[in-house]
Image (cartoon, rainbow, N blue to C red; front, side, top):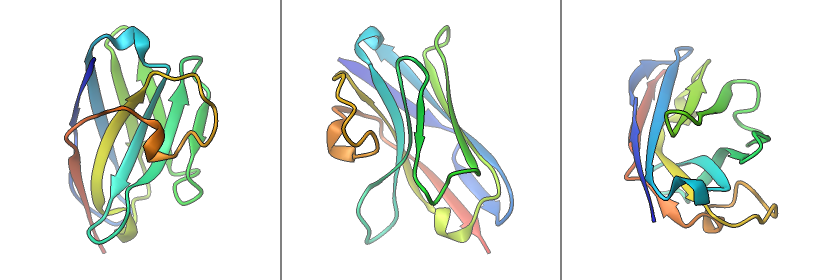
Length: 125
């Protein structure tokens, strides 16, 4: 089992920045993949960014060049640096972990088997 706790959400004006954190605990060695996902009201959950155990990263087209995913293995913490935020980035953001070594669709929410409770990001235009 892996427990995930997100933090760092908040309200920001368009063009601003936020950094989300996700503290992992439990059997963290089993987390081959970790990722960030988001869900806006009335929309399906979508993948934002993910990275594998080797540090290879994957990004949704909508955030490429603006968001950066990273991980501090010593602190068992995953980060999402979000710059140049847009109104359409407003959503609940979730951290997730996956124990499989499957590289098929690394941003697919159904791939991940551990989830945090989420942190709200609100961007005002």
